Length: 224
Image 1 (cartoon, rainbow, N blue to C red):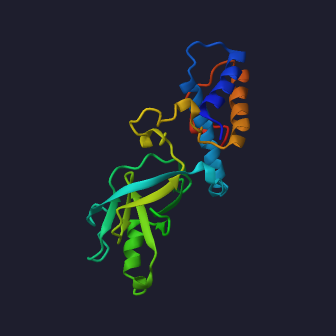
Image 2: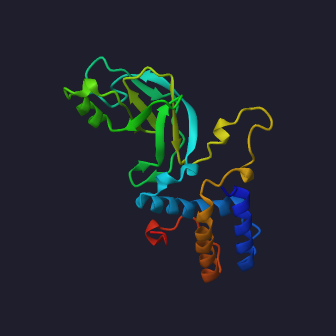
Image 3: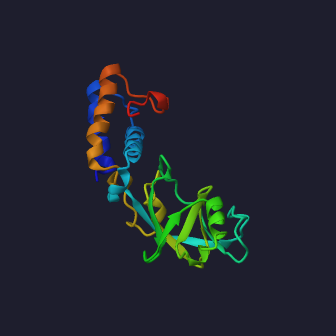
């Protein structure tokens, strides 16, 4: 993938050709990339194409789980005897698609068992079926940034998702050299997105002669 440094450098050249602005920062330039890149991701998701781009999904290899009760898991309808596990910490923010977070898979730590997304009410109704005792599948749901998994005694799980924040810094150790500088990190978008992203930004700059403002009304988004 294209790095943050590479894409901001190219766009800085585009901006300088139109307007010299000493206050134009790489952070602001990349915020424009993210704005349009996220719109392209949503378009791909709406067209049911996003799951084919495996490189977009970054892993959280070990999410610690703790035991919680049925009330916290919002699953009062489940019969007694069922245990619930919840992620110990809130998960990093994920990009949203048409049906919720852009998440490719949740599995056990060794990836031997896949866990399927559901809703607390749906799961509670499933448990009331006479055939549920033959169902060996495992399920999860999200509430307020936490993942909940019923009827397991695992210490952790693994997931792959498209995140809306930098997870590389979250996984850095305190040892010198372990963290990758921001400019050298992947942009988070596939290389073939950038031709369209740069064309959109360049068109705005050349048309208005101004640096695009951050956060226009979504209804005016050219990608919709």
